[in-house]
Length: 269
Image 1: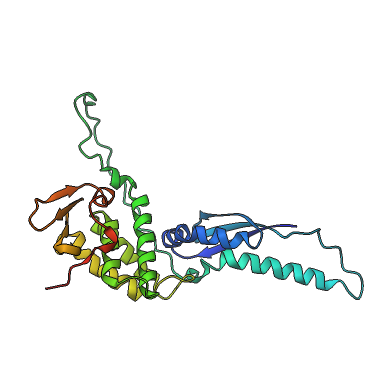
Image 2: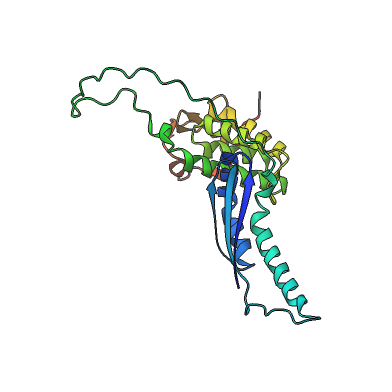
């Protein structure tokens, strides 16, 4: 028997969607154990609309005979509730969060006189935003958010030293302090609505605070034999005692010369 379930979740659509993306693999894995075929979300004026298609094995239950047969329907209903709870329960913790009020639309300005179109072979629009300003930083943010969650969870489980966890976050930020700040702001807004086994807000914020000085170049990462890794804009600079400094454009390049898991945030002072 197949069931299509719709769940409306009120709240800030941006926050709900970010968390849904982060927990989508977990929702899929758990849902498969309960007959989940597919789940998806869509933005609404009040928040999100979650859809889930669930199949319960076995034939359709027959109508109950007088004086009995209601137990089969009860068991089937219970299975459906359990299957859907594994999917919907992940995001219900944010149900009561208020949605940001939309900003008032500005009054229309008089349309300016058209200007001559520049020669496309020699000129480019001066006000064209950088690629990141066009929304291209979403994958970078999602990768950083996943790394932050994994590192903070490892710290709370006693599997990772906090200074090394902060180093992982600093490297994953790729020189983008704005991404660190965005993760921190989202974490503050989600405080008190823990989802599944996610780490505590205090642990996440402490580690982000330790990573930020490295990302902005005020501190550095240190490793064995006195080596240092400094953030220089988007580049990573490797400094070894008695050797010239070397710059790398990506963590993958640096990893060919240094064990990234051995790096940790330098102690203050």
